Amino acid sequence: MTSIPNTLLGLLEPAPSHGYELKREYDARFGQHRPLAFGQVYATLARLQRDGNVAVEGVEHGEGPERKRYAITEQGATVLERWLAQPEPPEPHLQTVLFTKVVLALLTDRSAERFLDAQRALHMERMRELTALRRSGSPAEVLLADYALFHLEADLRWIDVTSSRLGQLAEEVSK
Amino acid sequence: MTVEPILAARAVAKSFGPTQALRGAEVAVGRGEVLAVMGPSGSGKSTLLHCLAGILRPDSGEIWFDGQRIDRLGERTSSQLRRDRFGFVFQFGQLVPELPAVENVALPLLLGGQRRSKAMAEAGGWFEQLDIAGLEQRRPGELSGGEAQRVALARALVAAPAVLFADEPTGSLDSLAGERVMDLLVDAARSRGTTVVLVTHEPRVAAYADREVVVRDGRVSALVQT
Image (cartoon, rainbow over all chains, first blue to last red; front, side, top):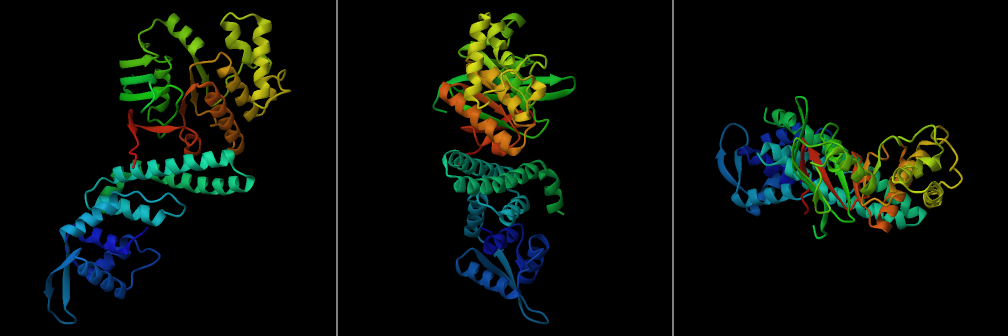
């Protein structure tokens, strides 16, 4: 599942940042249709801090409200690492989370290719199960299996194309 | 893999002029296994199939089949091996247009020296199995794509090959006809213990296999199992 806390951890890993900047970066990279609300950013950061995944590195006093600089902790990096390495359960409509994981892997110098391969293997496994099901199932089961198969196939095509465009994407992400 | 490999490529390299199609490809196929070879266009997956099947000779590396190294066989021995132990289905059936369907199916048996009446009877038996009974006397031009592909499948299996090589066998068919061909291909192979090497870029076709490998830039990467 798309996880805003994990996504914020991913954005924090390359360098510490403020809530406001995190919101801007999130919106620019992932929030095309649904920008984050400020309240959600601060609530999420507070929860991440409570759980020991981020720490406040410093507070800047200036005009306006004080600005806390958040940094990812070692524990937070482990949480992120685990989430990024973990393929998603193969089901339709994964676009957002798969995209987020690829971008964050590139942004944090992890292997996006390894993630895509793991995801691909899990998708193929599910497609094999569904293919077996549709070969023995009732007509209604066949229709349902077909629906899932076509959607998983679309994901796989996206995974393939993305794998071959990682170089290009890495350049853009690092800008 | 738990099954004994019947077919394997070891460090296979193959170039066409300046283009390196394969660069150190490694793969092993278990006896009776249905293996899908996937990969983008130009990744080298068809070249790998051609090397495994003894159609192309690798520049370096080895191909092993049934305990025997086959990449350095003479052309005569190699084509005999292909005729006796391997079956082939390609994207376009490549049937002989002048011959009725049943004679197309009987060809491998006739080339293997079988008597005509026996070969024709055996070939005829396949039409029932592949759900194309009644089309025996049609010429390839009078068959639909799916029917022609089933005739090609019968021809590939009639001589009871140990390995069936299928290169994009559904590539020219619509989804439903393609599924029918895959259902029949996999059922026929499994019921006879035939090993299948299936080259495809379509995940829905690859999902019929027991396992898949991906060819990228001339190398084979097995997928990470989680």
